[in-house]
Length: 321
Length: 298
Image (cartoon, each protein chain N blue to C red):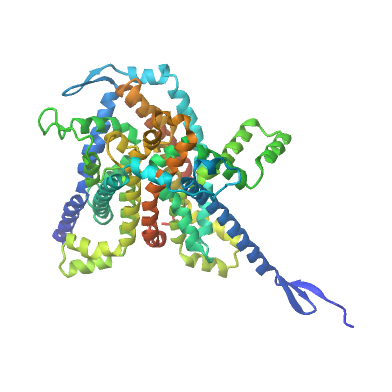
């Protein structure tokens, strides 16, 4: 009987002339198991709070104190949602928030796209200087200009043009609309930067062809350039919409009495439980979770619709110059 | 010929300024004017009257008050800087790692990408603020750390103590482990930027190195890392800014509270300027250090 032979060659364990084990394949197999483990672990960290938030929003008091209940409540109820909808005046606040976020993000999208295109395609005098100012506007802490802006919107006189005393724009949508219209709202520098990178990465030939065919710069921009950069537009719109929709920082400053979702959520526990809400952390938490979920839900739906653009667009946005 | 070139340049100038006009107006009205006003505010005392507000010049008293008299400001400033360094380091490491993972081809990649960018959509504003005080979230926070640090922290702590690791270092690790969920949730945009960078590396480079017989390890250090290094700088700067201007930052809250209930507009403006100066110094140092290490393909 022939002696059994075992040796390793080209990364394979060979016994009796047959390849038994391919180390390279095993290595890549282990690698992919590890990869899934890590990815699932991280996804868990991201999703777990969301799941708990949801599950606790449909719990009742008894479920919270029941040690055998972890995620799935024994007595699920929509009571928290009912409370949240009633005390947040959800339909009204939703509609207000939607109007504000939609108009602001649309305006920001238009203005930042125009500005970004100007920076990307035209070598005008002072291009670099103005772009440095875009970055500057992105870097300054909002708190720095928040107070002067607050005072300006309180006594809005267009810096001396309008009559003495000016108008009080606080408590209206104008403090959000005006900066959005002029590409200088919250994080608009980032959107200008993204759009500029996208347009710089786009091929010039189409535009040149349009010029040769006699289209002016604006017609070229709207009919040729914009349709080609739809992915980037979606990303900017999504960012802008999400930040405006969730924003509490500016809305609580300019429009503290506004019936907007974040403001209503902030006061939710107090409105439901009265002044004692700090002494009832569990009840506050239940109703707050329901309220937060009501705010996030539209965003999740929006994200589900747009994620195709969002996730794919990375390949095309050319965020990288 | 010469005339044509001139008109082309004029055309660039005219249309360029027409396109960026919104920003020019916006910058003047809503950035430059407030910045100048805030400088003025920081060296004056502000009183609000029925028809507007009045200012009286008091020199650098507000700055003096913020730095020397105010009990918390300076301490918090230093503290925020420390937290920032810790966060920026871990966010960068994590987001780069995540981007590398998400860039590979494997079944289910789309789902993981959707999940990883989810925090961009969720984490912000009032929800974040509520979570800080929230009872349930406090419990979850502990559970996540317990379940999802790769090592049991108690064991690690004893182990490090045996090794006589300095306390400062221990504290650093402890905070890092504590903050895993925060780090992951703050990394969405950075992952997006890194991913975009990884995808813009021309495949021909990898093909060439494969022909030369390079290993994956060598590919990483000699192609991937240099090619995305400009984005590492971009991301460091983005992360620092993002951290500095985020509302969950305790210093921002302090400044805001000073405006509405504390020492008033003047002092809070002075605080903002000190803070801004600190940011600029940090950004400048970071830029000088890392710009030398960055490899530019062009």
